[in-house]
Length: 206
Image (cartoon, rainbow, N blue to C red; front, side):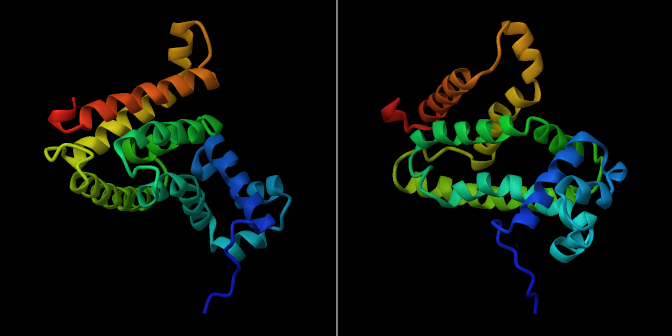
């Protein structure tokens, strides 16, 4: 029986996750050592094995820790109507603005197959796909969205609108001549949410 405390409020575990995120986003997986992570977290290196089992286990938990809040929304009240997509976009943008390298890490692992965790990330995303399909079915039953909406197309459209601004943030800011600050992100989330609300609505409500 596993008696290792797993609660996210555990300060050593939290520091290790934060340090791992900083290290893995800053450098290639094979160049990051557990000693470096432990030093950055001001923790004993043995705590990595204690909490996560291995460097790979810590890496996977770091990804899970970042993605779970976004996946958990699919089981919560935020998307009880199509209007909730504005809030979902905002949550995604806020999450990734705090860690702008994270979308690039996910893309590198999935598209370029660099570093470990590809199967693990795919499993997380498949869980999101299943939850999302269930949410779409619920919204259809409630008459919130059109019966013809394909949940996979909806998911791809969301990912496209959510990830692209974060992946190309530097280029967009250079082209616009100003930063994607909090006010801009709020407007972007609202606009994309309105696109979804209008595009998903049953024909009679358009």
